[in-house]
Image (cartoon, rainbow, N blue to C red):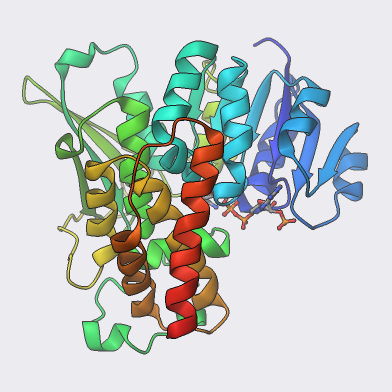
Length: 360
Ligand SMILES: NC(=O)c1ccc[n+]([C@@H]2O[C@H](COP(=O)([O-])OP(=O)(O)OC[C@H]3O[C@@H](n4cnc5c(N)ncnc54)[C@H](OP(=O)(O)O)[C@@H]3O)[C@@H](O)[C@H]2O)c1
């Protein structure tokens, strides 16, 4: 594998820390830039010999200055949009963990990718799994894809139980260890909604050909069904170092510290449909995706506002979905022609969600 200089955005987060572990295990990989929102980076910069470091500020300036071979966007939320568009437009390979940027920027991002011509490598485990099942297959041979969801900590809770769940309970994910925002998104299934929209843009598939199933043990990450009746599935322990390593060392598939799957250890492969009554955010995401324009951007923005409010103890768990639904009902959803219009659509949805929050 050729040497690869990586700009690691979101270096202090859950994905960022695991990426540093993967990079340290592969001599051809090095870090040329580190970014965080507010946590200091001096120690990491010294440990990894990194010259370009930025806490807060415009991520594209850091990318311009550091000239990476690959950008790993592991920032959380809409804050990652500028960096995603920059990498795609400049043809710099992009390992994308920041799903929110593809959800929000959708068609703009895909247009930039086509113009730029670099690689777009998904880091989300389900999308990495689909990417791997699709490798080398003709698009017309694909029937549909299936994304699995663990169902989160409240899979068996009744609607009445969900009314009173606490932040601590929502942060206790049964199978994955992740940052706080995605952990709450996993408990509400908004995460799977974001992933549905992400898959639509990444793989160019209509929404009706993307299914979501609940699979509590998170061993099967995704399946691709083909037109001849065959389906390929991707299995592995739920450990993000695998998709991170796959993206950073593509196409070499280097070894990781993660053990291979032990089939003698009574794996449970159980699947069930998600419940739209108890987890309405998945339905809202699908509707926003199908209606298109800036509605996915608005879904994401309102969800970010609602999750932050839940984490701050300002609203209950079920209020997250009602707040997003109300905000979506108020947006016009017209497509964004450029980043400026996208930023305005994001801000409008945040204003609507904020107003609803203040009135609550
Ligand atoms: N964690 C997982 O297992 C997992 C799995 C699949 C996909 N993802 C996706 O990966 C992304 C990161 O998730 P995470 O769980 O790693 O989140 P996290 O632990 O909360 O970390 C977020 C990182 O982003 C940085 N950040 C936030 N806003 C920024 C800004 N404006 N400029 C620069 N850096 C900024 C944070 O810096 P500070 O520390 O200074 O705040 C932190 O380093 C999310 O989009 C998530 O959906 C995560």
